[in-house]
Image (cartoon, rainbow, N blue to C red; front, side):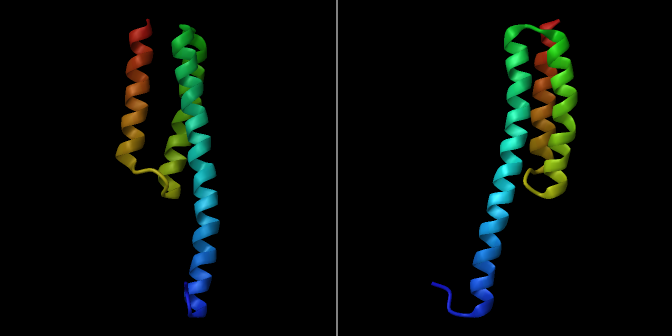
Length: 87
């Protein structure tokens, strides 16, 4: 257990940041699932719209530090490839 005031504060801050970051990651996953659902249904228009919505979410995750830039790039690339294969 933390003994110093600084260590106690750090535990409180870590807990708050973990909650916020978890919510951010969950939001990104939700957007990705919308794209995957549209791809699974074969609806190209909905998939295109969902893909356009997921791209800024991935970039926001990178900017906030919850995703590595290569991870976001890889996810977007794979979704784009699946969308183009749908045509």
